[in-house]
Length: 510
Image 1 (cartoon, one colour):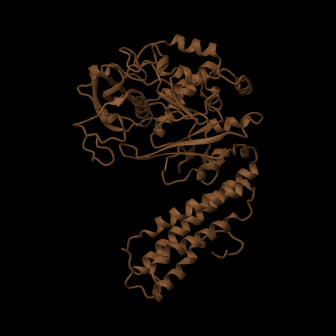
Image 2 (cartoon, helix red, strand yellow; image 1 turned 90 degrees about the vertical axis):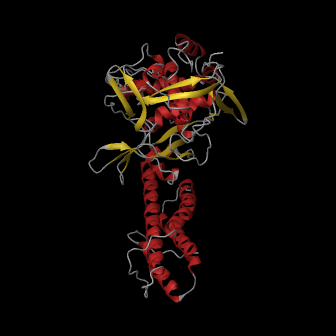
């Protein structure tokens, strides 16, 4: 039986406390009854939401780049008032693309290139497809699926790993591919590699999808607005990549990898894979509507990178302010657009973040997911939004000082030549205390942050963070002992917490 993503059950969904697995057709038909999608891993979910957004825009007419801003917003509001996707529009869209959602189609497998079987001398292996598996010369740590014993991958899981590769795949060496006279074995990074992606989250899947459609008129760049499954021909890998125009082009038309999955005889699992380069020419840039952009020293904007050690609340001001001054940050375009939904969803929308902490080439560190409270309406209160940003900056300033104080006291205590709390040697490592302090601080600082926002209390928040830092400083240094020179060093370095921090009075630590 063909693995048709429209009819086969592969998408895990939730309706309240009830969980089930559905295909794409049922997902859209019952989106108003479903609470959420429970896709994993998070990078795959990030890619999946972009794919679903393109389909949602197609069947609602919100992909029309010719609509001016006010007409586009009016159409979005009308769609929301309808409360569900139009069954007839769904039938027409999926009907005209019959066969294009077959995962293992001989000629047009979904989001894949069937030519790789002939153009690549060898395959990449199923382990290469799954980023959490060891491949090549990588060491075996958490998964023992070695190249000598690669277990098959269920087809429904393979879809998510396919999406992860296309959106977050590495740059550098890959399986060699030969097209005409051109042979190469290196690829560019996927369009979302190293990034953190922010998506509106409503009370139903329908609300989340409609709120997550960015204004199409922003992406009219003169190219064809087509998703890969909507094109009639496979792309020429030696030509110039198409302009990322429209929602189809921006969200699903910027892949830098070509992938092909080999199914088992019954098409219920994947037993092998080819992963290689998709283009040899330079890709054309485009701003993704779900990313935060910030300026470098030269004033150019680049996508904010994911950092697994950075809590989501520290980016909250980037979601409600058009321009965060301390880093020149620019909020995601899709969140700027939801401000117009004051009378519908704005007061109830949350934001979900999908992050993948990676380097630019092959090292994958950690993926993360987080959800903010339903506070996007604060974007309409500029003074409050600015106060929130200042509170976040105060928390970060205090934490940097805390880490510096803990580093300096560690050096002073562990310097044999130290007699008065001043380190004399320069070769002493910074020690474990700064990391211990940061871990303790950020967890409790988040509680202060949300408590003050909910209470609309923005009066001298730095004092709360200073008080917290003093307590953490005492907790971390408590294990140092009671020798006089140790106590002297601890007290001398405590004052570093107050460096360049505006405050009205020094708070007393508990």
